[in-house]
Every structure is written in C-alpha cells, then in structure tokens.
Amino acid sequence: MRQATDLESELGKLIAMLPERAHRPSAARNVNVQHQANLSPLEGLAVLVTERVGTMGFFLIIFAWTVIWLGWNMFAPGTCASTRFRRLSCGCLSPT
Image 1 (cartoon, rainbow, N blue to C red):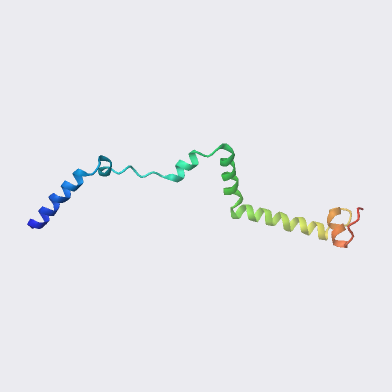
Image 2 (image 1 turned 180 degrees about the vertical axis):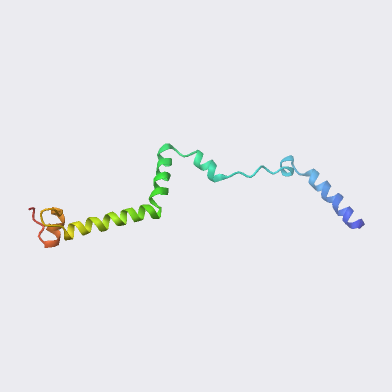
C-alpha cells in the first residue's frame, strides 16, 4: 500500500510540473459542423445538390423518365416521335 501512495505522490509531482494546458484538455468539437459553417454559398449549394441527386428517389425519377422517353420515341406513331431518334434508328443521319 505504501508503494501505491509513493507512486501517487510522485505522479502528482510530475503532473504539477506540466504546463497548465496539459491539465485541462480542450472540449471536443464537431469538425463537420465547423467545416460546414465555413462553406461559401456556392459550396453550400453544391453540397445540397449532391445530397439530393444521390438519393434513390431521384434515381427512380430519372430512370422512369428515361424509360418513358425511350418508349415514346421507339413506339409512338411516326409523326409524334422525336425526329432525332427516327434519324438515328433508321441509320440515316441526314436532316429530314
């Protein structure tokens, strides 16, 4: 028990010799919040767009739009379909 007390007193002396800052560590901070607060308006807009475009809902909307657009251009009556798709699907690239 005496050794523990001696060790404790020696440790107390060593701690007392350390600079004041070593006794009180600074509070933890959330660097993500700090970084987001320092973003420019354009960077903030870029983050917002990236968060929205990367969602599954946005993917499904784009996928559905693509399927509908391709379906319409492939199977719609000739006068209604897109001129560009008709030219490419016929293999004829000259303007109509």
